[in-house]
Image (cartoon, rainbow, N blue to C red; front, side):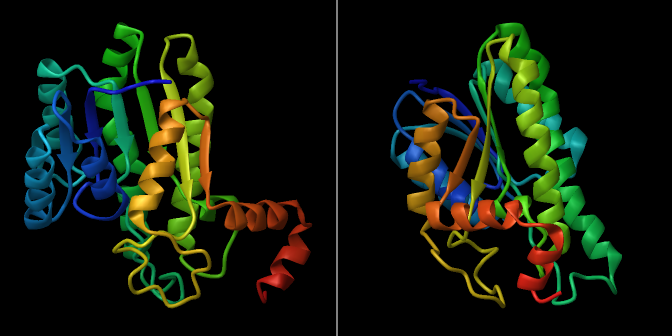
Length: 249
């Protein structure tokens, strides 16, 4: 079982990122927390400090490659990172999956895909040089099958899922673990106004517990909850035409 001391979490101002930050916070732990909402991020940082953790919190947009890289490397200089969680993401598609406004599609891809790359790239060489560490990429169970809503979100999560699962093989020889996290519906700001049913919705705190156990075991894929995981797996086994009919297409 792995334990972690110096941890980076993007998207830490709410939802799963916030829950992970609060759960990892403890004396002797250094946290680098990123989020877009400065006020919420400050509140999370103070709560983590109250639990005894050292916290460096910065409200940096993960699409800002240079600013994010500078902050990450400065933190790593003083606290060599052993767990990097690329969690920041958005789901901002409109009802028609934003086909009338491709700027929404492109913005989703920029945050959910480029944001992951911008988080991993500045530190990957250092992790490889130290021959240790763990990378976690937050995807989604929506990454496994085409769904009739949130097309750009689903596609972006599919991209980072396959990328994360692929680089796991490459980084194993350097002693670096890679886990891809695929949650179902979790109570977050993303799901707060979702216009569709969300079966087996779980709290961010419960999700954090599952994720932390999986990361400690260097699991390749941390997918949950089991009923939603099973439904997606079954849908992926069906011929494309059958799946489309089930989805109403």
